[in-house]
Image 1 (cartoon, one colour):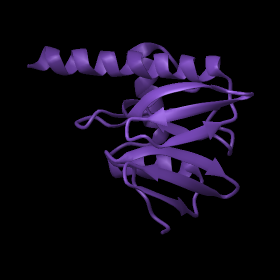
Image 2 (tube, one colour; image 1 turned 90 degrees about the horizontal axis):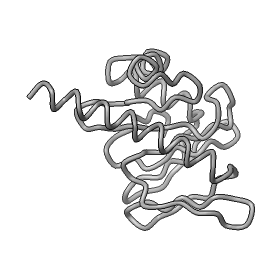
Image 3 (tube, one colour; image 1 turned 120 degrees about the horizontal axis):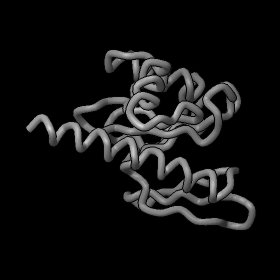
Image 4 (cartoon, helix red, strand yellow; image 1 turned 60 degrees about the vertical axis):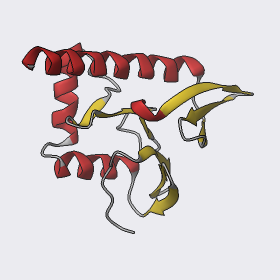
Length: 149
């Protein structure tokens, strides 16, 4: 599979060397593109660019570094990077699909609501901060949607 768009079943895009491991609700496979390329393509598919989505996040919550992004508004698809997106080993995680996360030795295990999990080579504090930022973004998005109703 060469083309992939993030959808409401996507749990995580795990960056590997020159390809990405995709975790979905009921599937798991590899795509020969970087996680950042998939993020860029997915944002474009939904009418923006990754940098446009990052600028939107900066406008909404004031975060510009390692900013979470709203990939698709109507379905509240929000992903956050595990590292700076400038790094090719940056992975992306869906905020809405996380059940919990915890340390396992010197790594971090992220458990999803469907029971699957991924192990990341980042600290608990980094992931916790990214989840908090993404949650703030989700909260602002939700309150703006409610203001329109």
